[in-house]
Length: 120
Image (cartoon, rainbow, N blue to C red):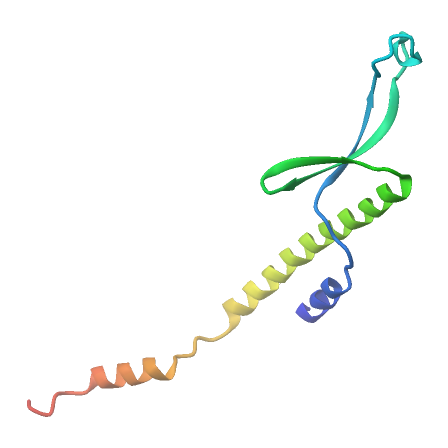
């Protein structure tokens, strides 16, 4: 199972964290259609939001192609998150099932401590 996970992780491609949201709004021109009652305003305008250095960063997309690229990268990142959780689960199971093996130094220490002193 872990081999399949590693293979899938290997071929994920470009990945980035973040979220894409759509915003609508009104511009600063009071004569614009967006200021008319019932008008939904301008948009939707799509924005990418992510964390960099502990700060929230928001970017606009210059083109529809740039937004689609970011959507693919975010999907790959979310898949990586899921695969990494699965990988940890598999490794936890392996660790729990693996027998305890004493190192050579632990065996020597225990043998020495179980011997009786020659002077007694």
